[in-house]
Image 1 (cartoon, rainbow, N blue to C red):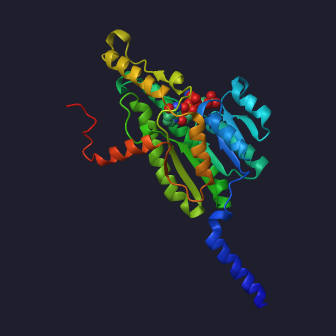
Image 2 (image 1 turned 30 degrees about the horizontal axis):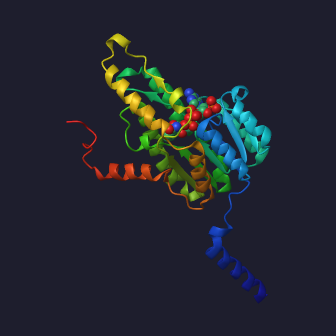
Image 3 (image 1 turned 90 degrees about the horizontal axis):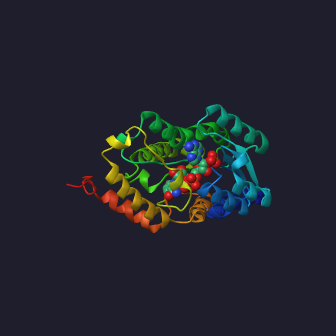
Length: 295
Ligand SMILES: NC(=O)c1ccc[n+]([C@@H]2O[C@H](COP(=O)([O-])OP(=O)(O)OC[C@H]3O[C@@H](n4cnc5c(N)ncnc54)[C@H](OP(=O)(O)O)[C@@H]3O)[C@@H](O)[C@H]2O)c1
């Protein structure tokens, strides 16, 4: 009898001291939104190579050629249709995956796009559309997956934020607002969900070389002849384009995401490069908020 007790105590001690090593994310089911291009596509590729079953969600599977090519070469990649702006689409897509897989270990809320220019240039509908994808879309996905994660007392939520979600972007204030909002709710989800061992991380890249710049929209509220921002707009766009062209490769962000998934105790904030960390550090030193405003 005492042998049993010694074995149980040994197992407990082993788990306590080596719990980190026992942890493995390998082979678990992961869902990625906006997987047809850029960071989403690179992440699907990397995680599938790492043995994850990857549900790669896209609005239009039939036109997602690169994703189709990836899935042909890797049976762990499953392409599914998902429009994150449609609650019914989100709930039914996630329900189907749960029926097939039994669980979803992690969701990566990656789908998003940008809108460029001063706030006054955009119609309210354009602003709302951006929030529908970048902010409400993530909430729809998170809320659809949470009951099953809570039941299993395990789960990961990774939200693609941005340096613009911490340091307001002069060129893209509305985009920044969507990422600020995502940062706020992610911090709150992280707190509220910790009793169920559900970990939330915000991935905070600077510029990344993807299709993001070409899919960015411009406001239509002001006609060209009455737009007072044209000069500013032109120079900001030129410098933004240069910055974007010198950004990180999507696979670098995918590698960071993989590391976060493998970490049993991931950070809430995850910068993807030392330069992003440096910009954030400086930002938080300026308690007046005046450093960035011209006088
Ligand atoms: N590139 C950067 O410099 C950068 C920097 C920081 C953060 N980010 C963030 O990283 C994420 C991925 O961006 P990316 O750079 O990889 O851009 P991307 O190459 O343009 O890919 C974006 C993906 O999001 C989905 N998407 C785009 N517009 C959408 C819309 N109107 N409604 C719903 N889904 C839409 C698309 O998915 P489907 O067409 O497959 O549905 C697309 O595959 C975004 O959340 C972005 O804000 C990007």
